[in-house]
Amino acid sequence: MSIQGRLESQPIQLTIEFSESKFHIVRDLDSLIFSLDRFVGTGHSPYFVLGLEMASIGHLLGDHELALDSSASRKPDHLADDNVVMALRLATGGQSVRFSAVTASGQLMLENQNLDSLQGRFIGSFGSEDDTIEGCFHVFALETFLTRTWP
Image (cartoon, rainbow, N blue to C red; front, side):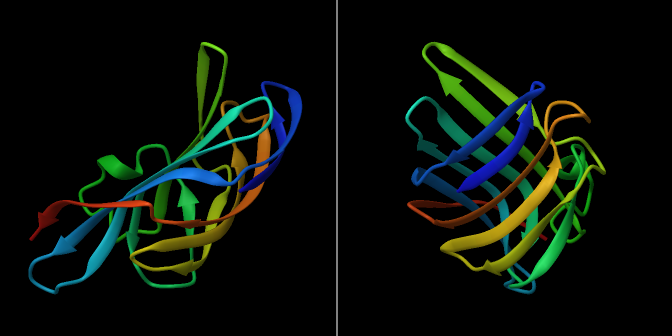
């Protein structure tokens, strides 16, 4: 994953390889459709551990766009709408800070999505509206969980 932009009013540019990646899959019992409920991945750069978190991603459709929405996972039909929760986590030493994506500040563009890999680009504000980050990623599932089923 590569990111560039500003966090906490400071310029940032990082590239990492994911050393951990977890896909949380949901399967609809009626239609047998699989959806990606959550993704969590982390990797190391020389000075930081960088994490990418996504929730409420939805159906495994291939190419599509999702709007950044911090409340997306609390909505009743959260796996069928076009919204996603995203956050970046930076850790160094004994400190870890989570930067949530600001609602309506950007989007996630998925270019390839299936049960064991995820590829895309994103742009949005993380932490505050003044701190915009853009990034790209291609990740393979190192762990996959069937977290629950939904009717």
